[in-house]
Image 1: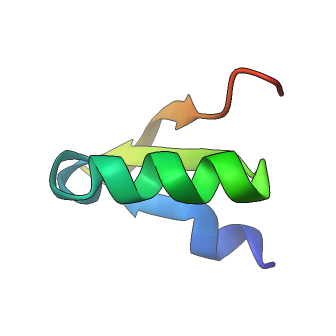
Image 2: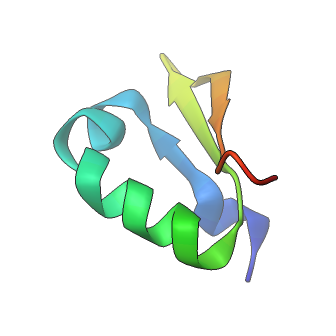
Length: 48
């Protein structure tokens, strides 16, 4: 999986939270969240 597919804006996090939890739980790949075009946080599963 390309890392670029794991970068999303904060608006995506707000509107797809449940889907993000499922995807990260299954893949164990972190998700980078941006705000105003800048990286702000990383969402990852607790086991990682």
